[in-house]
Image 1 (spheres, rainbow, N blue to C red):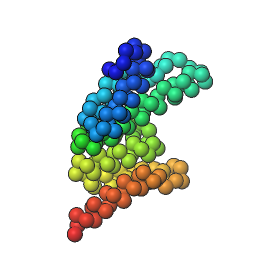
Image 2: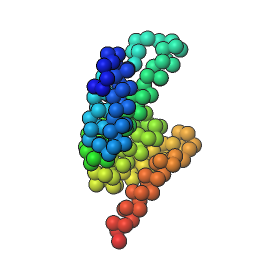
Image 3: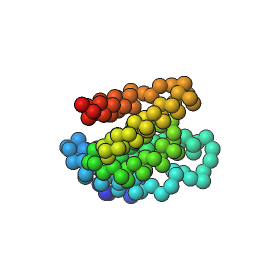
Image 4: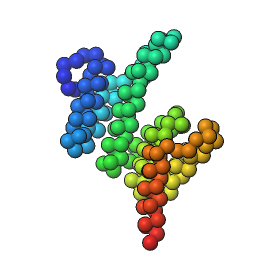
Length: 159
C-alpha cells in the first residue's frame, strides 16, 4: 500500500488516489489491483454497531468513497473484459440498491461486453420500469447513453 499510514481509512484514501493516478496513465490492470487492495481493507459496514444521527452521518461519509471505489473497480474490470465476476457482484448490488442507476449502467455494460446483449437490454428495461413504477422517473443520461450504444450495436449486427 502507498505511504506509511496505518489507519485503514487513510490507507484506503491513499491507495484509491494511487489507483486513479495509474488509471490516468492507462494502467488499467494496476488500477484495478490497487482498488481491490483498498477495498480489501473494509470489514463490514463502517461504524457497525453504533447508532444515532452523528454515527449515521459519519457512516455515510465513510461509505460513499467505498461505493465509488467499487464502481471504479467494476468499470476497470469491464473495460478489461473481466465480466463474469463483475456480473455476479453487480447482480447482488442491484438487488441491494435497486434504484442506484450507476450499478445498472455498469451491469448493462458488463452484459454487453460479455456478449450477452439480450441480457443487457433486459437489465435496462428492468431498471427503466422500476424507476417509472416506483419513482415516476425516466432513466438518467448515463443509462440512456448506455442503452442507445447497445441498441445501435444490436441494430448494426442485424445488417
